Structures are given as structure tokens and as C-alpha cells.
Length: 177
Image (tube, rainbow, N blue to C red; front, side):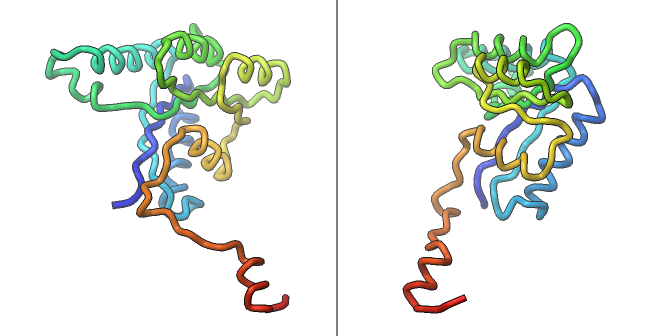
């Protein structure tokens, strides 16, 4: 019916933060700033290890021609973008970013890192390693558009509205403000 959903893999060890991100992404589509844009389909996991398992299964199922029926859900579930917390036990968001980039996919999955700590060295380190963006927690509604842009998911052409900027229209009709 509308634009394709942006499929987001949220990785955060905090169940509260995972839920907040999920609710924010849903609210953005349902009237909280989405403006008719594509909805988000959120898959959430609590560790970098689980994220890599999910991404690894997805990748191997795409390459395999005879995947077992039990893995059908995973093989159909492509991920457009990964949104990961920086500070997590075992595997940090930075480690996850490097692991995803090391997969060597011809179409690498964009990764956005988020953190509640505004540390310039950390931000620079992640961006240098290939992160698409670095967002400070708590996420806000205007961060949703940044995620949408980083995902690379384009609206269907039927949804594109062609409009001239207001000042151009007004100048052509010689209206004054």
C-alpha cells in the first residue's frame, strides 16, 4: 500500500532502551513525524553475539539453496540497517560494527551506533570504522529521519510527491509575504 518498511535490527542490552527505540520508530510512522514515510519493522536482540548469529543465519540462508523449513523466517527477514548501543557486555557496539563490516557483503548493511555518552573520540572511532552515523541517547523523533536516510530504503515511486518549494511558487504568482 505505502512505501516499503525499513527493517531495523536494534541491538541493546537494556530491555528498556530496546522498547523505547521500538516505540519511537512505530510512533514516527503513526503520526509522530513520519509524514507518510515508510514504516519500520523492528527486530530486537540483547547482544552483539545474537545480532551476528541472526545476520550470519540470514547470510547463509541466502547463499544456500536448500535451507531447512525451520529457518524460513530468518531467510525472509532481510535487515536494512543495524542500530546498536555502544556499551554492551561481551561484544561492544564498536566490535559489532567491525564484525558486520568484516562480513564482506557486496551490499554492506549500514550500522548506526548510539550511546548516552557524548565522547568525541568514541564517535570518531565509530565513524572511522564505517558507522553511517552516531546518535546520542535518548533517541528523539528527529533521529528517526536520520535512520531512514542511513538505511538507503527509498520510497516507492508512487509515493513521491513533486512539489515546488513555496518561495518559487509564490514568486511565480507574485504573491508577497
